Image (spheres, rainbow, N blue to C red):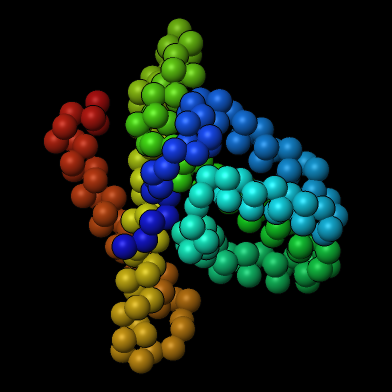
Amino acid sequence: MTTLGLYHPATTPLHRLPAGPKLVVTAAAIVALTLWIDRPWQVLPVAAVVAGLYVLARIPVRLAVVQLRPLLWMLAFIGVFQVVVAGWERAVVVCGSLLLAVALAALVTLTTRVTDMLDAIIAGLGPLRRVGVNPERIGLVLVMTIRCIPLLGELVTQVSDARKARGLGFSLRALVVPVVVGALRSADAMGEALSARGVDD
C-alpha cells in the first residue's frame, strides 16, 4: 500500500510543531519560493533546504521518494511543454518550483496528524462563521482531499501493476481510464457513507 500523504510518527521538532503554525509557515514558504525562484540555479539551494527538513524530520529516503513519484509524469509533460514554448531554463524553474512545493506539502502531511490539521483549520476559519462560512465543512473537505491522495496513488499503482502482469506496454489512455473509473466509484461509495452519517445536509 502506498504511504503517500500518510502520517509518519516520530518525535522530531517538526513533528512537535503545532499544526496551525506549520500550515501557515508552509503556505508562506511555498508562495515565497514560487516568487523567488526565477533562475535555474536558484532551485538548488531551496532543494538543499527542503532535503535538510526531511532529514530533520527523519523521513526515510524511500518514503520521501514515494511522495514525489506520482508527480513525475505530470512534470515530464510540463517540462516538455515549457522547453518548447519558453526554453529549458524556464522548464527547470517551473518544474523545480512545483516539485519543491509538493515536497513541502508532503512533509506537512508526513509530520502532522490529520486530526491536528482538521482542528487547526477549523480554529483558523472560526471567525468566518459570522459571514455564514461553515469551518467544519471546509475542514472536512480539506482533510478528505488529503486522505484521498493515498487512494488515488494506490489506484494508479494497481492499474500499472495489472498491465505489467499482462505483459502490456505503457498506454496513457489505458492507464487514465481505469484510474478515473476507480476514482469515481470510490467517490460514489464515500458519498453514500457520508450521506448515511447525515453529512450531506
